[in-house]
Structures are given as C-alpha cells and as structure tokens.
Image: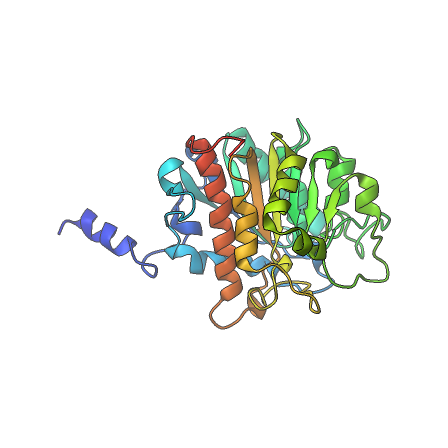
Length: 327
C-alpha cells in the first residue's frame, strides 16, 4: 500500500489524525474555500452566568472528526459539492474584555466575507452573532432565523452588567444597526418562565415574528417550516442556533439551560433546518455549548456537530445547484 493510500485509509476513521471541524482540511486563508468553518472561543459576553463557552470549538473539533458524511435526506456529500475548510479560531488577544473581543470577531468575519466564503461558526456565547452580522449584513440587512430558548432582545437595558455588545442584546442591536430586517426575520423556540427584568414585548416592538415553543408544538413542524419560509422569502438569510433551544435530555451541556418545559428534540431541530433547503443561507452559527457541563459521552457536542453538518449541507447543496429557493 502506498503512503497516500495508507493515509486515505486512516483518514476514513473517526479517531485518527488531527481533529478539525467536520473533518475538513485546515487552512486559515478563507480565499481557498467556499464554506469557512470557524471556531469562535468567546465567553465573556455572557459571563454573568456560566463562563466556559469558549471551550465549545475545541469540544466540537474533538467529536466531529467522524462527520465527513453523506446527508441521508438530501442525498449529497457537502464536502464534494463545495470547498470546506476549517479556518481555525478567531484571534482575540483581549478575550477577557468582551467589547474588545467582538471587534476582533467582526474583523475576522469581514476578511471571510471579503474572500467570498460563507461562514458556519461554532461558539462561543451568543454575543458572537452580532459582530458576525456586522461583517455580513453591513451592505444589505439580512433575514434572520433565530432558534433559541430566549429572545436576546434586552433592549431597555443599556448593558449586561457592563458588557455593551452582550449575549442579551445582540438580537435587538442587530435591528437598530440595520444588520437584519425584522420584517423578514423570525425567532422561534422560546420557552420557560422569564426573568423579572425581561422585556418580553421588545421583539414584537422591533418587528420580529416570535413563535414560542408551545406555539411551535401546536403548529407542527411542517406548518412551522412554512411560516419560516414565508417570512424569509428569497432574502439572504443568516441562521443562529442556540443549543439551549434543545431539550436538556439531548443537550445538557449548555449555558442558561431552561428546565420545566420540553425543548426541541434533535429530530425536530434537524427537520427545521432541513426545511430551509434552497433558501439563500449566507452564514450560520451554533452557540452556547458548555463542554464542562456535558455528559461523559459529549452528547451536546455531538449534537452541535450534527447541527453544523445540517447548516453546512444547506449551503453546499445550494452552491452545488442541488436545490432551488422553492424546494
């Protein structure tokens, strides 16, 4: 067996070699890929609760080495339709100061956007979404699909305990900065009892369509997908998926876990993302993984990997001509 054949044989395993996001090759230059897989190890945007979300990218790299797969429902291999690269982690030398770190995040994603690559990121707390949107939505407001247990529109609080661009503010600031068009955007999956200081009507005032988890259950997945597709239309769309929208039984390792009411199952979450097939998805993130709270087998990191794969498959399928906006 030749050396090249030996390496290809070993690379087919889930445990050999240097782990990368979705087993993509590592190349920090986004000019060399169509889809940039990005680690954003940032956790000071929501440091008032639990602080280990910066460990998320490392955890997903560890478990995602076996995820160079064929998408069963779409019948595609995303790695064959588009050039995927793990471009590494965002460099944030002042990571303990959130409002400085977000500037580094924005700068890195501006480089990725200028290179023409479409980013799919693993966080990191939910404050990472705002600087990403600043890079991607500066020229044209995007449609936003926001899956979460929480609204993240604490609009009447100037800061989150001193953090300006916090995980609690990003969804409202994105509207005020005209990075997303709320009339083409949707927030879904919210559940549980709200904190006394939460302004529950801010998202409505901003113009978002909010579908809480109980309403999602009443609608059913097919009707929910139809509502999302009607809302975003053919607009360039960003998808932000907070892992705390999942049920704690399948995602125990998250920040701000919501007990008391069932979250989405992985089947439901995957179906929702698959329902976006053919939409003009120009970027996405999966956030709020807390590896230090995960189960011994890393099930939350595994499910984060599966969601990243769904998001990458959406983009690769469209780039490869496998679906149209009406699919």
